[in-house]
Every structure is written in structure tokens, then in C-alpha cells.
Image 1 (cartoon, rainbow, N blue to C red):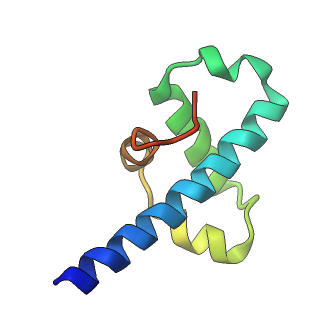
Image 2 (cartoon, rainbow, N blue to C red):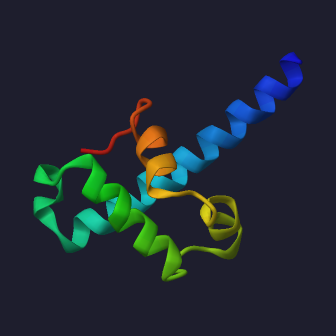
Length: 81
């Protein structure tokens, strides 16, 4: 069971890293992103993912995340807004 939890944690951390990269890209195009609420940001991230602007490996890892999933992942030690 511990190994399964470790692999889930690793996967979750990888997803968070990808989301942080996306937030960084979105911030470059909108410096006011800091002031946008997290729910709206999660939808912007989902749109970014759907536009397939990521490397294939990253896309495969996050393509099935819903805005709610993204919001939850962002809330755990994220550098996001």
C-alpha cells in the first residue's frame, strides 16, 4: 500500500509541476492573472490543455483533469496566484 501511495504522490507532483508551468505561460500573456480568482484560472488552464500547447507526455498526464481537479491540485503548495 505504501508503494501505491508513493506512486500516486509522484504522479500528483508531476501534474502540479505541469500546472505550474501552464500558469507561468498564462502569466506571461496576462500580467494581471495574479488578481484572477482560482476558479477562473482553473478554467483557463483547462483551455490551455485542450489547445494541446504542451509536450505530448505532459498533455497525456493532464488531459483528463477537470477544472475542479485542477483547482484541487493548485491548492496544494502551488506557486499559483
